[in-house]
Length: 102
Image 1 (cartoon, rainbow, N blue to C red):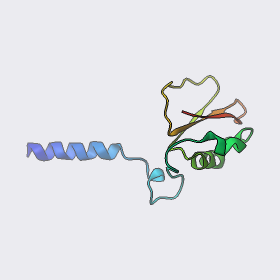
Image 2 (tube, rainbow, N blue to C red):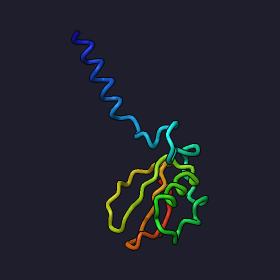
Image 3 (cartoon, helix red, strand yellow):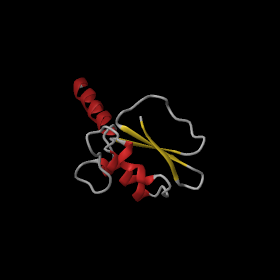
């Protein structure tokens, strides 16, 4: 019985780590796209655009990134390099000012 309780706890713990439904393959909405390697040159068109949900979804998909990280002015961010992440710098007017991988 003790092992069954531990197994249940493990299953529930792993379920909590699952991506939200909007990121799972069978659901509509943004998908993890491309090969997971960011290419910011493919989304240079987005600089100067409003950072709407639709624009951000296009940036994510077209960059080939597995992750997207929007950054507001003066927002703290980790310095770790992630080749699968596109960072979208957004100014105070909600306009995309810079795109970079990592």
